[in-house]
Length: 168
Image (cartoon, rainbow, N blue to C red; front, side, top):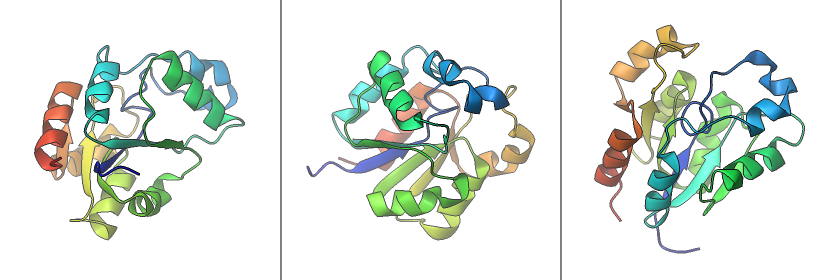
């Protein structure tokens, strides 16, 4: 392994766009055909991958979700320079983040942000990312977490925050 710091990202709602629908778990095509959240996500992740080891951590748990997730990342030319971990429930993500030695984790789920704050801070900094405030199914639950956390609502601000908080 190189000497680059490690950072971790959730996928759905942070990198993967489209509005989440419960039947996604049963319709692999919806995952594979989902757009990126923002048009320039790929370019931002390519830039970040020159400075950081990047891991993607998702609660996705459908059959072959690991393969479909890697195929989606490759389809969108998003760099996989650390790894992809799936089937990690939100309540347990902080354990995987700690095992990877992540300096910063970006997620849109308030349970994940709170668990990092409670179990890993200040070693790992949680960043709440909510670009889809009006569409997010848990926005009401997230408002307090968002307002009381490091946060960003677009990728330009997110990259600035990462580069400011995790020196290389």
